[in-house]
Image (cartoon, rainbow, N blue to C red):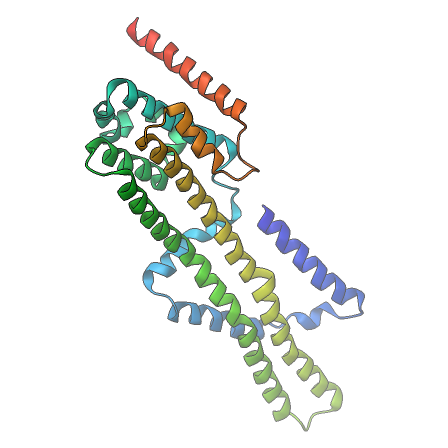
Length: 296
């Protein structure tokens, strides 16, 4: 909704200011200019990106109109999930987690968090590195290097749509100039017309420059910035998981390990120590109740 609100503010400010200055809004309605600028921009987007980048960009566009995927409660659930997994591994041995990670859909622990199970990036990240920890054949430094490499790859893929939109936005002012020049050429070809008509043609031509700049900096480039922010959110949850798992590999107790993860979070969504402690207490209590009901 913030994207729509932002667009409304942009249009209201630009068109409202133009109208207050005595401008005629009808003069800005130039569909042919929009066809030139928009068509050339889309064409350049297709030329400048491979099929993978185009598909990723189209898939990312609906996400721009949704809120943040990772809220404070999401991070608390991630930390609670890791706490339960690491606690079981510490009490019963890491091999006891093999059944959990091989079939998360039927896991008593994973199924408590259906929202997380619906996020393949987070789920695959947790499962893959728990599998490495269970194998015991990789030390903490090797796991950390591998995690950093995967996060870097994930960031590169996540920023691909943002880079594509940013390049597209950067091209719109130039295509606006193209449309304006073509309009001026059309006006000069009609130089024998009365001055009033000639002035109108030139004014219509200048709308191309206006539209190109407005589309670039008022509509397209902000979307690229928003996509980068969403990409940073995804990276942050992976860094949080990384901190928890590495501290566990280095021998930290589960309660201490999730504290390492909590400290990596942005202050705006970071739960306090006591909030997380209370959440873990509730999770443990719910698990004990479920176990008692199952045994009875």
